[in-house]
Amino acid sequence: MTKSSYRILIADSHPLFRGSLENVINASFPGAEIIQVDTLAHTLRVLSEGGRYDLLILDISLRHLACFEGLIRIRKQAMDLPVAVISAFNFQHLALGALNLGAVGFIPKTVSSDELATILQKILNGQTYHPEMLENAEKGLFEKTPLAKVTAAMRNLTKRQFEILQKLRLGKSNKLIAKELGLCEATVKAHVSDVLDKLGAVSRTHVVALMKELELTRIAAMERQAFNQPQQLAQGV
Image 1 (spheres, one colour):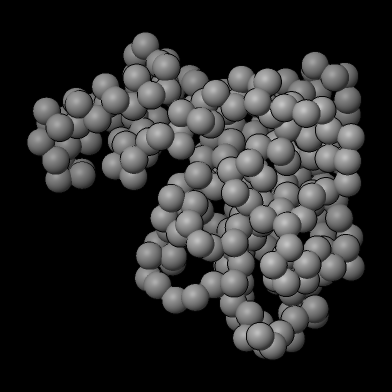
Image 2 (cartoon, rainbow, N blue to C red):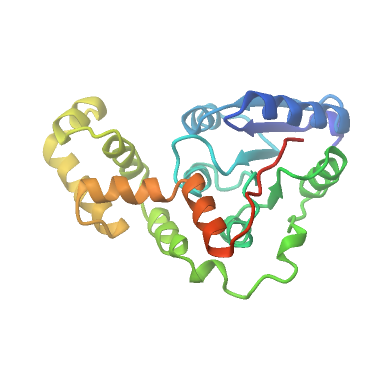
């Protein structure tokens, strides 16, 4: 495959970063076709339209999503698509979690443009990228975190149950969910019960609170408090 034949999808909520990332790709792989999306819904819609993509570069913290929710749903829809997770939150257990879920790399947003180009070339050559911070990572670190349990539960949700979950987070009633999804109310009620059961939630309010706690900003705040470390946010590529 020549460089000019690469098709790369960038999914990130921030236009400035998407533009910077596209500039790096254009400079490193002249002629590559690059598509930008800013939400999970947009990403899934583009993938459903068909066509070959050599790589999806996915921001781990797409807006309004729980940690790894985007990666899990994309992997369910496009299992053969290589997905490199990129993140401003540089924690070992997040990197391990992404790789455990099938990502072909975990890329900190703190890397330089030259480093990013090298990493992308390795991934496009079929290699998996492990960041340096994993060199001395504790064995089983991710599995020891509360995030691992909920992530495993999310992997068991069906596409329809993810749709129901999204509606629950918006506070919608079973009747309204049924109307919007074209389902009968009894079917929605059954799906809601399954979602609560799989996520270990005791009520609709509980599942909303649970998913809120899994947003990256909350996780990062807990990490900084636990380890008394400064916020590890990137300044961009």
